[in-house]
Image (cartoon, rainbow, N blue to C red):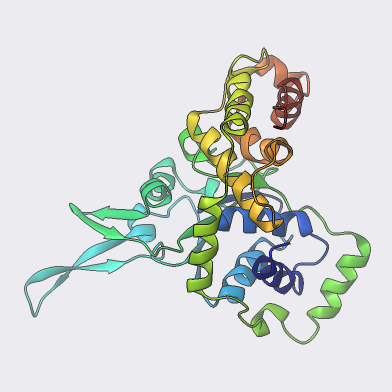
Length: 310
C-alpha cells in the first residue's frame, strides 16, 4: 500500500474496528474527489467514520441532521440584511466545510436535497446570483436508513448519480462490538485522534491519483460494463456516462492505494458493484422476484470480456 495512504488507513482503523472494506471505500472516494453514500441502519458508526477521516487530515467536518422541515438555506446559507451598512451580507451555511456529513439525507424534501447538487458536482454554491466557491477538499458523506420508509423522500436518480460509491458498514462482529464498548468506556477515542496527513498532502495524493495511467482498453472495459447495464433485461434505467467516469476514477484511486503504476482491469471489476449498483433502477418484476442491482452488476461485469495484457 502507498505509505501515505497506509498512514491514513491505519489511523482511521484505531476507531473504526473490523471495517477495512469501508475504510478503503472512503479513502478511494477521498482520493478520487468523489462523494460517498452510506446506506445503513442507525448506530453502526457512520458519524464516527466521517469524524475520524476529518481528524486524520486535520480538516473540518460539519454535520447536518436532515429533517422534513429543513430548508435549502439551512444547508447553503443565506443573505441577511445588515442594518448599519444598509446592505445584504452572505452568511455561509454548513455546506462550506471540508467534510459534510449529511445525516439521513432521505428525510429532507427533494427541494432541500437538491441544494447539495451544485456543490457536489461543481464545488460551488450560487446564492442570489453570486457564486461562492467551496473548499478544494469538499466531500459529502451522506447516510440513509434502508429500513425506515415513513417520513422519507427517496433520493432521485440525479442525486444518486452524484455519489461515486455506495457502501454499508453493517453490524460489527461480536469481538469487534466488545472492543467498541471497551474503547468508549471513558470517552470517545475519535476525540483524541491526531492528524497524520494535512491538506497539502491530500492535494498531492489527489494529483497522483488523477495522473494514474489508464490504458484505453481498460477505459473501454469500464464503459462496456456501464453500457451493458442499460441493456440488461432486469434494468429499467441503466448507469450514465458519469458512472463510467466515476468507475475509472475510483479504479485510479484504488491503484494508487495499492502502490500500482497503472490501473488493472481487475480493479475496475472489483469496484463495479459499489460504483454502479445504487445508480440502477430495476424493473418492478425484478424487484418482486428478489433480484438486486448488485447482482445485476456482478453478472454484467462477469459477462464483459477483460482486455488482454500487452
